[in-house]
Image (cartoon, helix red, strand yellow):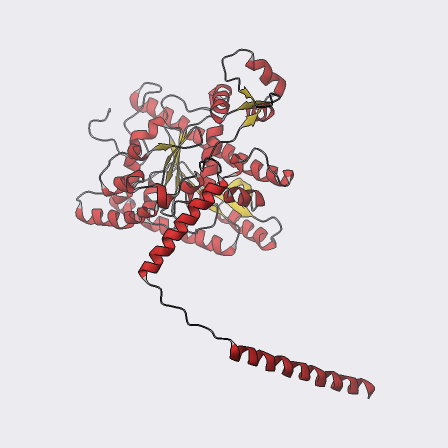
Length: 451
């Protein structure tokens, strides 16, 4: 009986408190005046756009102070020796020959430093056998996925930086109107990139070679074709030309456009929009290889399946039904943004491994979802821009090792393509190292080309 009486008392007390709270809430809401949102016109949107661009400029100026431009990192003697895979003492001894950059002493005079061009000079000397052979040309790689936020742009720039650190010369082409890759090079797409700086003149037919748009970057060994929101125009220009111009092949514009520069670079990396758009189709059909960054999540896994299905349908319509073919040298899935503590992610990784176990294969490394990558991006950088990390050293090493392994594996694939190119050229021309008329497996020989 006593317990029942206590429960009844508690219930009465709770109801009393609830009534008091409800009464005060009702009184407060009656006094609260919620204003209806004012209409937003096109002029307001234009004002917001201008404010956003100005804010981005201020943020970049603060992050890249004092020059407002990105600068490549500096390496010390130990770091250079580690890149070369030799002991520090061996490096010091090798410097005695005087035929490679000696670096410079820092302001204090107690440490020798090396700039990126100096580091690349050492790498090219020590890795002579790993560089592009005579008779081979640039291997073009597209980074593609239907979805945004999968690490596509980060994969593109880290692949380019990593390949350049191995001594290769890289051209990066940004075909995404959002210009995220361009931004990571310290260039603001909205304010500093004009139409003639992008691939748009090539798309419109005003140019036949992409050479006009190539510019140097802060990172020695990497040239860039930037992007800007103006590239959205490509999605209208290409189908319009397909309708009006007899014999025009919208899917081959970029393929033909880079022919003129294939011999100037070792690797060409193309960052694509997060959609299977006209520009994405151009990038894929201009490529020797495709890399798809894929986080182990259910939605990303489903989106990837849709990507391959639609890509297959499109290539059937554009190529197979016209009697053409396209051979890719490699297609890889890169597990990205991997959270090792996510149990669901572990299950999806098994699905990915089972699904892509044949011609399209999963790379044998995982890019971790890491604070290192996030903090580097805030400062318009990547793990390769960092030579001294203020956070946990093990966290940084884990992220850097993953990207190094990815770059190393892709380099192996690139070298295999070079060997096939040289062998093919020898069979075609009868002369080792002499370039054949066909530059790319999807690029037919032009009229007047050497037979």
